[in-house]
Image 1 (tube, rainbow, N blue to C red):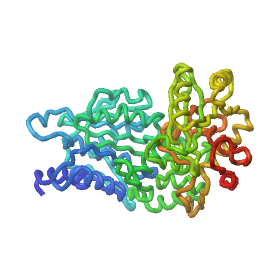
Image 2: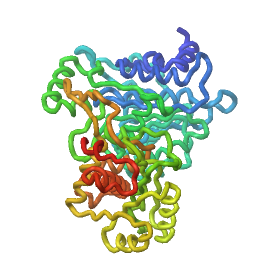
Image 3: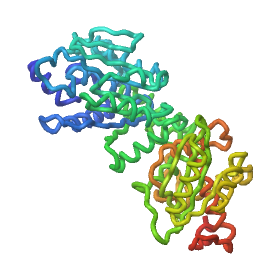
Image 4: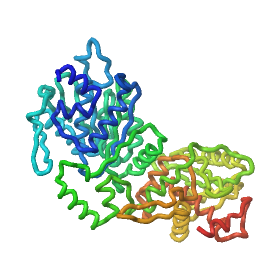
Length: 498
């Protein structure tokens, strides 16, 4: 094959590029991912103009970082996203590999250097190989600056490694890029914010691909948001293309070792093994609410306007400090089960009288909705007095009352759930379980995912408003059927069976 034909084919075929030009073997997961990149980038001989959003979710040691390195080389070599013509050769093109951990971000640069200097080696069926003799892209690597996390190529392309854990993404502000990968993204403390404020804005000039890469980690701060993105992708409800892989597919680890490791981790903890080996979302301990139960909440496409002849409840957690928790108001439609959260309002700080006005407007708009509010402390007492005309119900978060509220919340979230475990995998026989439906609120999702009973150091404003609403709904209908309040529907029989 002539060099010109090989260059042209490598542009349109990201699977051919590493095998021919870089002299690298690929495992099945890596091939699937590169094939997905090809299909997303190219429509026959024509480049797709839209920005591509992609997720790679796989088990540990599945070959993710080497694969990332290949894609960075591919984008940097062809300057994907730049129109060919005068000035193309001298155009300063950038790709970013970012991660909450500095070590992980720089690991990608290390593999890029090894690949382009012919020092990458691997083992297949007991025999060691290297790309040194088969590397054809011999003069592409120019140099590096480890302090800056910068790797330079001879065509004026650059790959940067940034740690978002150190600067929350400010290190690459102002720099455009053609490709941004976010490695181990659930470890971010604020993934959604980083994507919105720092990542997508860097792709506006010539950006072609944003890629989220991770093995799920139930202890990670942004695990629930990553779970939500993956779940929505699998349902076709967002623009992300998703590919999954497992440790067992990594042909560069001897088969005997893979089988032995699988047996070991399965025997120690078959549920956690699903995360380690296959990159699945699991829940074992720590948080009070399971990720899958949280994700089941989001079944409304958007917030809902008030409707005639519907019954509403508003739960309020006050927070008037400019640096503390937000004031959160959740509007519940309690006419029937499943109950629905139809609107939410949140504000940090603010004038108490302005917040009171917001609440009164909501009660009027939603058919004279009943109100339950946090009555703890001086602030709760003051708000109760100022709102006496609404005759609010007051939640005093004593230990028994709070424990009961959290119990009722779990009942609502998991009602009619039927699960079983087969070979360490949790099987949901009724995936549509749960008696609360809501549109997606990322703050509520994150706080539910990290909530623990000892919540003194946790953000809990959204989850407090949430469990107060559950508590009031149960209190009105669960154990006092004769005290029906102003609600028109007696749900006693329904709730009593939960």
